[in-house]
Length: 413
Image: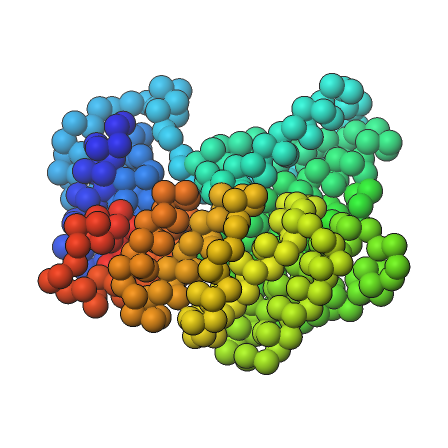
């Protein structure tokens, strides 16, 4: 299905849904899909080709199939499965829905893991994180679907000498999944993935991986607006880690994790409108970054002086201190960080400009962020809220660029 046809189909679904007076959340619940999936369908990102999915959607809209998709052809069996093109994390959500290896609980024999599998699995997990940092959720969902069960089985059936590393790889894969779910505003699934990463980390060769799991879990709590739980989990992790990370000769990895946890607490307090503690934890993170002395990517946290300032921008915006956010962001060079971090900085600067009523600059930054990470901007709740605000303020003076961005993000839904 071409991009143009996907967009045309998506507009038709959105129009029919609105005619029925349904929200995206209501229609998604009626057909047993996520609101994220439906949003991507309506924006032309998620193709719908399989006949059974088309019928499900038509039934939810209360219309005949031919009204929804006049050219729909009856595909069945393997052919239908091969034409379906998942573009979000629904498949990965199903993978974490239940126990990953029930048959092994019934006494299946442990078999040796071929030596060649370990390098392959290491490369696969590295690739997962490349996709996560790039916000390429379509490829990420397709890759994680088969990888998670494979890692789960390998960690249970491999020789003892390999099991610690396999649990570490499993923890890293679940952490990538948790990060992606948070960015798609699927915090309940992120909670499950983060919790599983912590369990795998306990059995791994690297105890610090469990603290990274707490970092991912706390982000899920923030997305759910469970700020007290986020604060409790993060503060406990900082308390346990601090005495190790603050000693002379602390490992860089320990500093990266400690600094990242301080950034989470800054986020928690900013979301609660607590200015003083939010600034305190930004200061703590800056101090840790100075000790570290460079931008690193330990455990895919991207912690270092640059990322601290990116988070300082976001914290200032959350607190309504737009001028401070713009001052911090002025001249900040994030070119050495991932696409996701660079896009996040641009998005938050766009939010700051919107708070200052600099609507042209706000739109410019949001468009730059979209060019880097379109899936993040089109699915990010805060970004869509800012775009909606720009459209409402602009009224009849809205530029073609703004109107097109509103349509691509479905910001007015």
